[in-house]
Image (cartoon, rainbow, N blue to C red; front, top):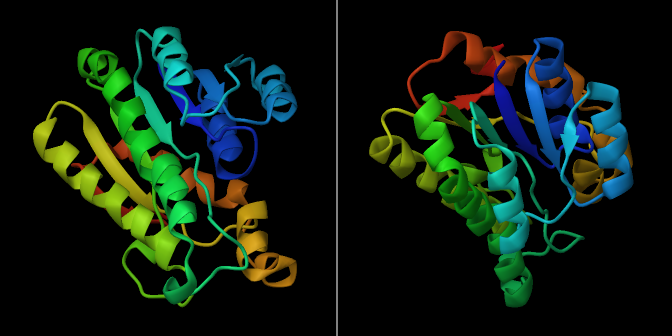
Length: 220
């Protein structure tokens, strides 16, 4: 049985990915800050719930101990930053510092903690990115900068860890609370549900292409 660790797994894309993997017979360890929602998801999927914040080093250590044989790490947990989305001229530096912690440093630290297991299993990493990492959208400078940093870390990691597949993926807009916070509930309601998006990302596991950047459109 293959084992996956998914962050931000209590709702949205993380939960949709967990449902898809559970349907394929994967053993799952799920983490998120919202304990009640996370435990409900774990009961639904027969998964192990480890609630907590991935920016907390002690929590990352607990996660690494929970998955001594890991085939897939999904770094899905992410912050949006200040809302309404501010222009860079007005962006609070402390807010960007916190966003870098959640969107860049925490995923890297979790990768470092789980790499021994991933190497042993010749496993894979999916880092969830965004088109804001490569396009210039007004108001998205802080969030986009963190995703651009995550993508560059992914590129270098792929070069340094040839036995581990590293995929950084832009899933496109999804009908999530984060998107509603960014653009408003009415516009967010026009986007696809995460359950529609998840199969494209999970197709990577069957195809196992070389490490690289992918968009949902390329995977569909």
